[in-house]
Image (cartoon, rainbow, N blue to C red):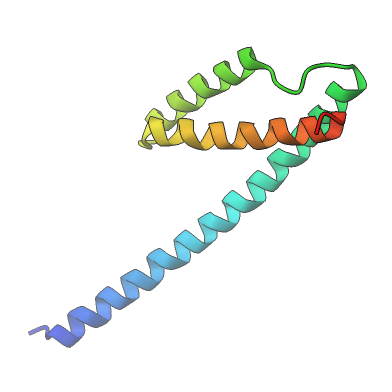
Length: 103
């Protein structure tokens, strides 16, 4: 016969395992974003060097549509994915503006 104490102990172990997975995934997200921003900084330098605009609305629209499709495949809310990418793109554009001396 299991007791409430046993059930609570099992729940605590499951919670600990889930939190460990979440912590690993958070680290992956941070390092992935770091890598992404390294590449977008390079893009910003190329754009500045060749006098290209910091923003590319056509590319941004393609990326948003692509990310929404990926989100659906990953069982993630596409609206959340779109908001997340919009935030990232806004940061990238700010970096590009800084690199080009616009801000």
